[in-house]
Image (cartoon, rainbow, N blue to C red; front, side, top):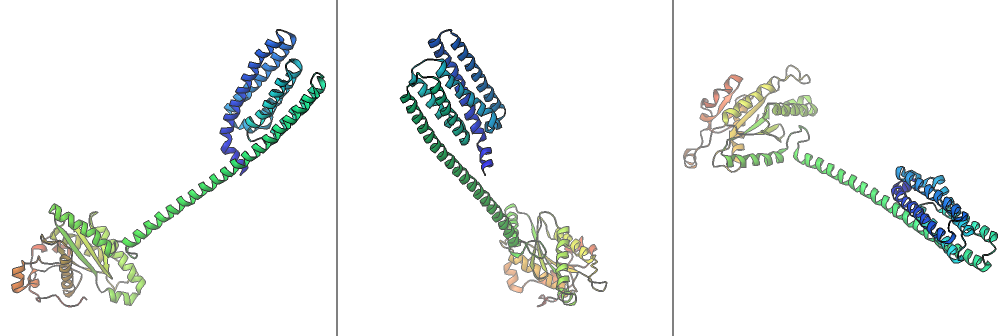
Length: 422
């Protein structure tokens, strides 16, 4: 955690250290002018100037190194050497430049505070630098008997107070920064968990939406979703004045097949028939599972002839299937009933009922066929004598009938469709 904290705050510390080193270099150059005003062009001034220039060069070199490589900020040797050099020059100034003692004490206090302010994240070295400053001041005080003992004691107490205050302040700031960093990490972790939860919820919502719209066995639209899509196509057909046909598809003798081969084979047959439906339909067509072994199809932009051709292709494809698990003695066929939406109809129910009756008729004729339901007669005519289903149903038992049987009327049959499915 500490290493992560240091990496996160490295750029800020590097910028802070560069600014501090440049400021220290500027101050040392400025104090060279004060040295000249006190010492003139003496040898002491030359020595102080040389020392100050070396210190300024060292500060600028470390600042340049930090600018090029911010990791230098947390290295022990470069920054500590510069701090040691600066403190040593300040101690030498007390010996080489005679001035009022209060000025030297003030400069030492400022230097002690600067160690805490400008050395980022280095509390042990801050304490070591201040200890060196105190020991050096004591050494200089013993070497220069002109400094009053009271001033030396006062200066030491002041430096110790500054160190205590600085140590407490830096310790508190370090703790607060690390607590803030810890809270930031917790917040980021909470955000990641929240994003992950949101993603999982979105995936779950997508799965639920898929489950609500899709038949789990065949992978096509379930009954509810089919009617939603078909109603959209119905509204579009009424708005644009285009035809819309519907087909009812039923797997022949499915109950016997299910009883003979088992429900697993029955489920496989339903999935296979659904795949056949998808393979022969257009992209705009809507396929759904109506219930049990029945499928329903909505064919936009398709009249009865087009719908019959598509249904015949489906019937032929299913009839040509060879499923090894069924054996050669069991053939797989479908019966298809077709109807279309009439001009005055605003719902699918009537057209589906006609397609369902056509499917009944196909079952009665022997299955494995396509039956097109008749268009309904006007209300007044139908009320007088009913719809003649027997003369209007069209049956296509093979592929050749798909092109010309739409306009051919079948032989008269019973007036009503049989009451039950086969």
